[in-house]
Image 1 (cartoon, rainbow, N blue to C red):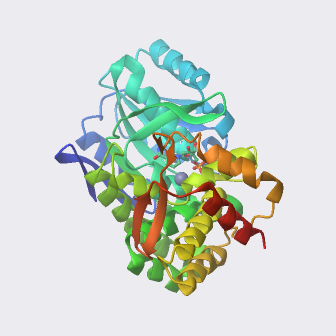
Image 2 (image 1 turned 135 degrees about the vertical axis):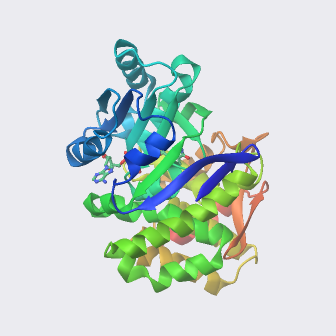
Length: 359
Ligand SMILES: NC(=O)c1ccc[n+]([C@@H]2O[C@H](COP(=O)([O-])OP(=O)(O)OC[C@H]3O[C@@H](n4cnc5c(N)ncnc54)[C@H](O)[C@@H]3O)[C@@H](O)[C@H]2O)c1
Ligand SMILES: [Zn+2]
């Protein structure tokens, strides 16, 4: 699958169940003799660094690795500085390559370092979580958090290649695996009712992590994300639809002090959006119930009983960086597969939706 950017073919997404063939691709892209730094985290390194290194051994350049401490709390500028120092000491120049081997945290940080080191060095994505393979590795958003504010500093910077090895998803723990599905199902909700039905039909194979089905699912999910980011790479219109579930989702994430995973919060946010869409008469009650049931079927949370936090959650939605002149931009559904951005969702509607989720 080829992703286009600014009117031209920009990078390829390869769907595979191993790393084999990656070195040949890098050679074709002109990195066969270049220095390569594999950037990964402390949890992924013992699992896949060696296998990836073996692949690279057929290339003749010097190869090093740089390992961050795993976890969102390390997605910050000081970690990036350590990487800059490593690259400088290893004399990396702008023709060399970074490889992001890991989840969204590693991908976002490596991409940001690549965008800024020497004003831009090439990087590729080798995503290893469901979230990273279905969402964060595509579209060129990179960045770090700043004092608890997520993704406050960043850049749009495109990878040269995305290599999806579906087999690495087998080592994810169950909670991480399930949470990633929020973004996958989201793609069906906003753009493609057929994909939503396909997911329901293949749920057992998917949750049992059967490889051909996982690969097929990722390909379908990426196709939807590709089509959205190609139309609107810098989030001025269409790309906002990808924020379905994220207005209340982000607010819950923050109100809960990041004790829930991102995908779990997005699931709750999508339930809230479904409640508001139904309350406005945009979708039927049975559509709303179907949306909520499908999230629950994939093991995602659909109820939230922290009534003590509701007011705070609504207040936080107003400080989200995706507001428009003070109005919260909220993605609603006209139907499953047909989302739109609304700027007039009221605090009262959000509270009513949260209250429905508490029961
Ligand atoms: N750039 C974008 O467009 C975009 C989109 C969505 C989310 N994000 C960002 O992505 C980040 C979340 O990504 P994530 O959910 O992948 O989290 P993550 O990168 O923290 O990975 C989750 C955990 O799983 C471990 N892990 C990764 N791959 C593994 C594997 N194959 N086997 C076993 N363990 C593995 C990691 O070490 C980590 O502990 C957030 O920082 C979010 O802001 C970015
Ligand atoms: Zn998300």
